[in-house]
Image 1: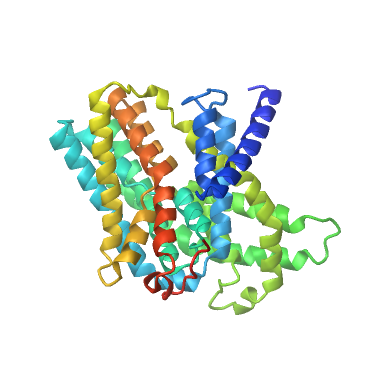
Image 2 (image 1 turned 60 degrees about the horizontal axis):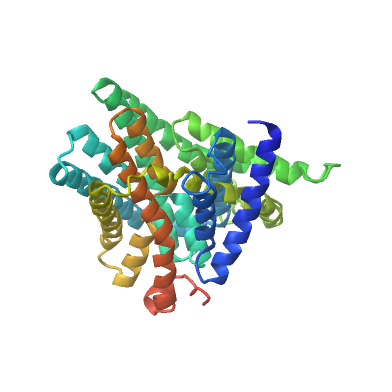
Amino acid sequence: MEGASFLIQLAGILMAARIAGEIAVRLGAPSVIGELLVGVVLGPSLLGWIAPNELIRLMAEIGIILLLFEVGLETDLGRLARSGRQSIVVAIGGFVTPFALGFAVSRLLFGHDQLLALFVGGTLTATSIGVTVRVLRDVRRQNSYEGQVVLGAAVLDDVMGVLLLAVFYDFSRSGEVNLQDLGQVSLLITAFFVLAPVVAKVISFLISHYRRVSQLPGLVASTILSLVMFFAWLAHAVGAPELLGGFAAGLALSRRFFLPLGVALARNTDFAEEVERDMKPIVQMFTPFFFVTVGLTLDLTAVDWGSPFIWLFSISIAFVAIVGKIAGGYLLYREHWLMRSAIGMAMVPRGEVGLVFAELGRVTGILDAQTYAGMVLVVAYTTLFSPFWIKVFYRLYGHRPELTERGGSPPSR
């Protein structure tokens, strides 16, 4: 791509995402809806002005990494740990149930072969942590009890999704699963989650110390951005999604994170506030690229809208995709039904993660054109419509004590 072409696309995405987000908010919808629709309108689905090329995908990758970094900064690690059991239950339930239902519907109702049905089920296990976090932030529930449960569950879903993707990739190439490679990747991801926040905290202490003697402005922003990108690379190197590297760095720099043998490192609240202040404009600049790119990737022109199969298949699979994720929330049987519904609905968006599964199935020749188009529609249903449901749900029930008594403040109307 010529440099000038990329510059005008860059300007178009930033301005269109900002305007669409403002319009969406004024109409009472989450801002993420406007940004997703910008991608659909500008991309191959409608106008075809912008294609999701490698440069735009790279900007989107940086955007989701920085978004998860900001989420980590704002996360209360103690509350996240206390919701650990609930997050595990929701993650496993929301992973296994849609996988089983998707496989069964594909295999029994549509007669697909076993490998194709496995890919259909695998695509439904995904949860787009970026879309979910942004929607919860739009309704001001990111720091609520259900927000912490959903965050933990979405992170676990991402890890399990990567492992499942690795299994499917091996199986599609060789017809067997290499358990040794799978175990090695699992071990490396676990080690990363244990060690990365500790290392990041030590590095942040050094940055905090040397910023006092720096003669140039911008030391905090440039060094913290470098730290986030390094941990994103490190996460990829051990087989985890890059965005989890940003999340780990954000957790380590949070004012609520401390080391058992170095509590003093957590007491520098001025530095933590400076990090949040300096990084926020950078995060806000890059984040829209991620949501616009999700919309750009949804090529709805590939769908044969006159095919009865497309409608029957996509609606059937979308139904089990939604039910399967909501069922994960309902496994928390001790919670009120409103809390279980809120958690389940927040896990529904598939976004870019579902598209990665579907794309792998298409590239390897496992998903035929019709089935692939149907899966793209399922991702579109769950990604574009879920924010509306969640917004309406909180507008109706957000001030009920069953949703506020667990530590979350009610959203503003």
